[in-house]
Image (cartoon, rainbow, N blue to C red; front, side, top):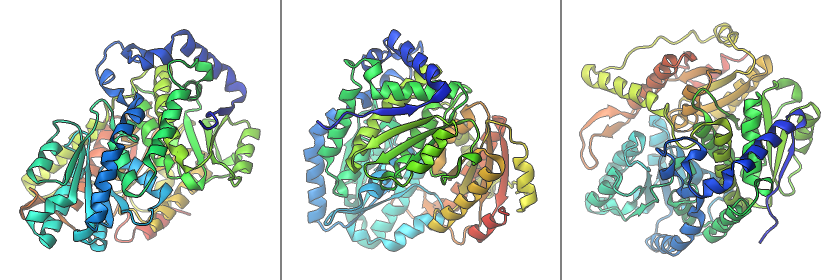
Length: 549
């Protein structure tokens, strides 16, 4: 077995609070109770706890299904498949994206990408580049009813059927879902190549080492047994026999929870480039697990590293450092010297992701105990969905969505909105536009400007993707967010079939995206959040530039 994981923490004046939280965890036998599936670690009632703890042993359980995954991949290779597209949101899409961006595609395996945007151009972008005869679609949703995922399926099923015929379309689809879900029935009805039934006791954001993450991993040629082996090593290192003081997950969870209570609730990640995309996965895990009951830890990922002077006193820096990567050492040392608490976690190689997946799942569960919240539910996610459904119903009845006046696109209006900020706030850019490298660079520039002028933490999310990630935190925390919604004109639109295999359509992808933006805006307003909306017109990058000085 490789060298055990160590948590290296330099917490300064916060060390006492972290030590006290860890001691309380030990006194209450929290770790042993978690492994015993004791729901009272978090809440008196078992709802959405006892049926959400399957991830504790999924790494070892999944080792038994590796041969079937290998066989499926071999069949696809033999049949000439060269591409795979994951159709999913949140927990169904983030782990596959991390794995593809970290490991790339091994020669002879499938080039895998992820579609988690209802932007029409994003949907068409994949249709334009793919060959239906050589493409596999992974329809991934735990519930089996995620509206975005099923919309993607209906569009691409018709697209494949148009190119190859309806009798061959189903063999280009594989479902990953829970037993008895609507998607399981769809897979039977449309004769999918396979339907992988996941352990129903695993929540979406805890599913990286289950079918949801491992089939995509196998498709791109990742050594799945090795990845699972790292996950099992993390299980052993923080297992029920390990004292909390020796458990990396207990130590990390105590630090996250205690420092959040002490006001250091912006967990800011500095991650080595080789595994940088891990930040997007851990962002969902932390935000959706801890942002509720008026509390929350705000994960800050992808924020360009700056000098210590641009950060407020609400940061906890987490340095995930790949062996041999010294590029960020000096910056992290400067944060420590300036008095910011710092946690350092060492990764030996990219397969250490298997260890990190489990480490952070268990650590966040421990942090939930420290914060006295249930880390496995997401009570505020439904609020945006309810409002989006209301917008869709209005569209169905009248043929149009409600009109919301956007704020004038100017630096003055933008600055006036930010002037509401208070110490301890954070600023979120919510971009309901097509994800592109150019747009991401423009958003990064904008968030650096905001941070430089306000010293506030900044986050960025593409909509509707972030609704399945940070959306819970936005409505469930203490109300410290300032939300900047960015929309744009769609150059073209794409119909969503009412039923797979049928031509009739009563909804367009652009309408769905706008309904989701309007629904989330209303949910934020209903929760008393500060929100402003800017319309970027037909040139997203130029529109963002108009908000920068």
